[in-house]
Length: 378
Image 1 (tube, helix red, strand yellow):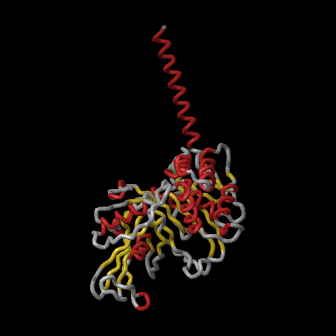
Image 2: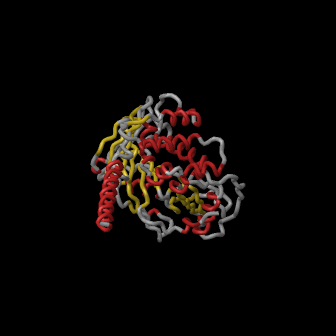
Image 3: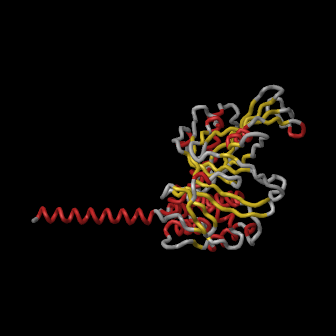
């Protein structure tokens, strides 16, 4: 009877466990599929929030309240933006039987921090993304006392060492979960055509704004746009810089490459003109890969072979005078793509993700990075 009783208890436990797993899996399939109500032309904000909500590591940071540790360690008085962002993310992933939630409290905090977003004017989603990431970073920055920046001469160093030193200098002042995820390092090489001297500068980037390539025949690909961004430019005439070696203004060539690839690579397709963001819009269809975006050719280090997978897109429909923002996101719980159109969330085919409305692309690193930067912290 004793062993029979034990077997019976094990069977009951097993059935209970299976039932609980089934229940959890069923509930899991509903997570992250909640819309955001439009509060009067806030589609630009809703689109970016859904893309960030589907950034797995940032979402988990909020769901596990990891931000609270960073906020408490910093003892900052102004933490409302991160608080409201975390609360909203938690509502998007824990709400039950809810089609949509209101981001009103979050929007109120955004407007307190940036009066530019007050009212119902037409706004740019990429500009809002930059503001939001910068604001979140400032509130959870692990650096409590920023050291003074010391001007050091790194020109005698090899490029890799120079880039590493400059990255460590950046981390000494700016170090947060947001930086861990979104910030990379860009290398700019300037070569004097008179003496051949080459100087390099390394700058952090939160996203890359890339021009849209134009072709008379054939499709335009994302790599075409990246090649245009990294192609060698000639600086002449009024643009002539001062050569460090010649000590005079000389005709130079300039070229970009990526020194450090971020875990989350945000690519902003420059559809609006630089002179006036609402003057004109390019509706060129750019063919971008959903999987296995290999950026080896744009790397400063030949040993780097970063491969990225797409997980979110912020779309803009309409023209330069006005329009509407939506988001396409790959739900991490289901592994399927969904369309987020303010309050409405609906399943979609992966074949529908590419369109001429794609504006901001969110890619996640699929391969482990071999960069030495990963362990370089001061």
